[in-house]
Length: 320
Image 1 (cartoon, one colour):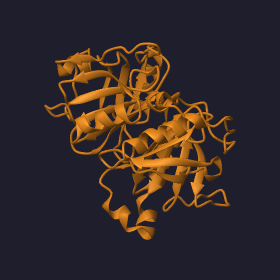
Image 2 (cartoon, rainbow, N blue to C red):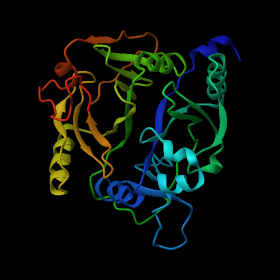
Image 3 (cartoon, one colour):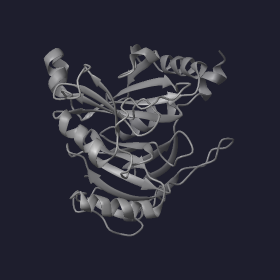
């Protein structure tokens, strides 16, 4: 393997996000009934129609992927591992994918060159799909890297509803971090992300494919800031606003239009209070043979909402 291959490889997509929760059953109801997710796997397995979710880990999907969201029971983990009682954030892990086994080997070589400790582990929720690379970023957030499966999966449950609104796919994750510069260096240097936009050295949007951002980093107390899902069009955004109103789900922010990314958005929260952002018409980059320089924003309201409205829960530093 050449040094050029090692230095050129980069992750290609965000595959799924895992979250800790103290109430798996409530979260599953929310993501199935409100968001339209499909139930893929419950660990440990349940033979009957009545699933015992209180102490289970659950994996949910929006399309043909095995899952895009994992819900990990803090109650179950506390009974088996003392580390679960000291979790600092709601993030269990985030998973990225590469195209080929050669890309995975090249990325592992680059991570080793950077003295990043790697372990081989099973794919969560899909142990038969092969081992994956596990490691941590400078904040200690767990990251898993794998190769995109060759084949897609048929839905694990045939009785899922598909007549309701549901997002197209997982799009991005936004993390609050007290180590913004170190985190930017890690994601750009170790994983190959490019910088799309900076705001006042307090937040940065990072891309690994055509989308304007796949990871967003915000200076602040370590936690998930929000998880973003894509929807198709502006009319879909209005349909979602009406639908969430009928579900008595209060909108926390939006509809609006971000300056950075130029996408339409609205924000609400799941049953654990984790913010969800729906995004339509996200800016696309096609700079395969050249690097587009990052834009620098100096006005927070312009970068965050071209339509001007800022939420009351966001403090003057731009964080929740």
